[in-house]
Length: 594
Picture 1 (tube, rainbow, N blue to C red):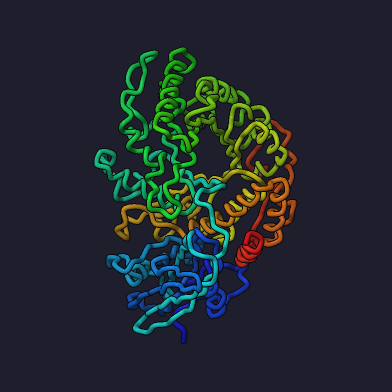
Picture 2 (tube, helix red, strand yellow):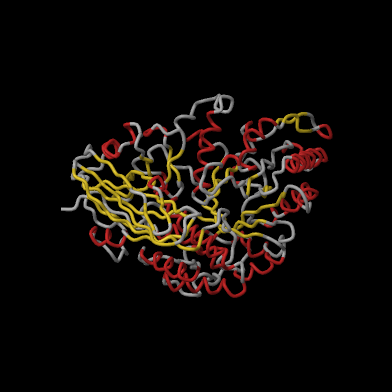
């Protein structure tokens, strides 16, 4: 009887029965899954992933080891250390156990990071299978061709060997992403959510915060995503490590000391924070500025000359300092996230719904105009997150606002908006939430593909570090607000551990970036061709990207009610599709690209 099985990266199994959890999966037996998973195809400079299920039959402390041989080819080899192994942690969601958190394993790992220890502490009742996630990195300089090696799985004193065949393609994934996968989060959230930081009032002074935060940024970077960390709260309050020290008032206000700010953000903006990653030392492509209703000028002065003087002066100092430091590859966003429903300010800066709040766009553009309209040096842009009023605003504010982050459903009602925004030099992202853990993994792959098919520049998951205090059992919102988990409490890791959905997102981003690079050589022709390829592979009708407008779209947005949205058109792009459909898409894509 076999004790270990290979499983594709988009199919998960029940730890109690070994049944496939994806209801639409075509292949459902572990033996058949092993056969399909033993042959992999990947571009170079990319990760290709699979899983190993190990039969434990209730013996959580079963001795276990896994070893990978180098993959040999006629034209070279892929070293054994190109493999990385993770133990899958199971969470109980909607009455079933699903894997999501991934705990890194290593030959010299401490006891709390062995498969036996992790499985025992996971404490799934009647557990019959433990599962490992495997990443294999295909180096950029490997010669294209076929490579063969083996994975040796030892459990309970018995060793099974799985032959692994990998085809490395001529195509290589670019280091820099052409589509932005934005993992949004907020003002110092990880300090409140990591046990190693929670309650440490000296976390900035002793450097512990920066060490942990950098691991989050590096993990996002390595998974072809951007950790996007809004530095201020709804009140406008900002942790002191996120801003330079100011002094003076009115015409005398200036930056007294940049050292704290530069030490924090400089490595992200010159790329050095990412040295040693597979993608290399690429600076952040975007970063929020700390400017808001209440900083640098006190909101008590709003509408007065002093407010304008202070806001504009410090904005100018930011521009000069960033330019002098050579931070020229990042776009710095002026974004106003305030919402009047919190009763802190009388205006909505975010997702404007009421016409009397529109003046905020005009007021703050004027305050920052001198910097926003500069053609050289550091790049500062005005950003809006838009939903209710998008149909009214994209034409009105395209010359002011250069980054539009639009509710995914509402954006799909206005395909005509892309023309005016592109003509004005704007970038467009859509926003939504990550898939809950109990939803098929194919759903996580859709956002990058939709961005390519529609011709937008990126997408946002609005919150990604809200795992909840009981994440190891059931994460908050069934995981839809967490693409990372904390490694400190259970595993002694001073930073994040990834999720299966983050790995799935990376795989989709690799494909999307290859698509986008090919499209940009002949965009007028190739965008439609790729859209057709995606649609044919995933069973998406050509009209599904743009499902039409709702009956209430011509009403003023302040008259829209939440209940109306349940009947409004929505682009449902993956429901009912089998997870193997993404493999079909990749085969067609690699055949096209070579």
